Amino acid sequence: MHHDTSASSATVSEDWSHFLPGFMLTHTVHLVSGLNLAIVSTAAAVLEGEAAAVDRWIVTRCGDVLEQKILLGEMTEGRAVRLREQLAALDGVLRTRMEHHFVRAGSAVSEKAQASAG
Image 1: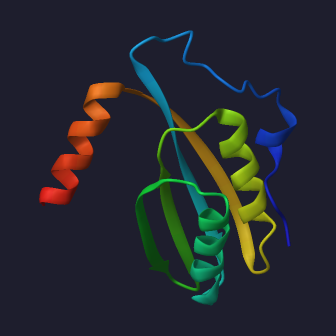
Image 2: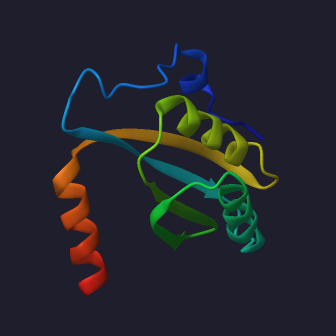
């Protein structure tokens, strides 16, 4: 089993907000695993145990694997990387990767309102 850990080897800043006032840092974790649905509930338990705010969670079957796209709310980059590492260590996970997004603070609130209204 191979885990992509290249993101964890880089220096991670705990707080980027002072560089871009008016923006918040959000993250998307992409997790690929075997078809075992227990991985979804195990990942949910990890995120719940870490009190991570999940804005959206999409699970898609692609052939013989499950692809999970987990959009996390505002948190530091260091915390997000640690969460990704915990998820990558789960039994049955084939690979993970993380995207970091700077989002205007007001637009993230309006996106959540649109998603819940739709």
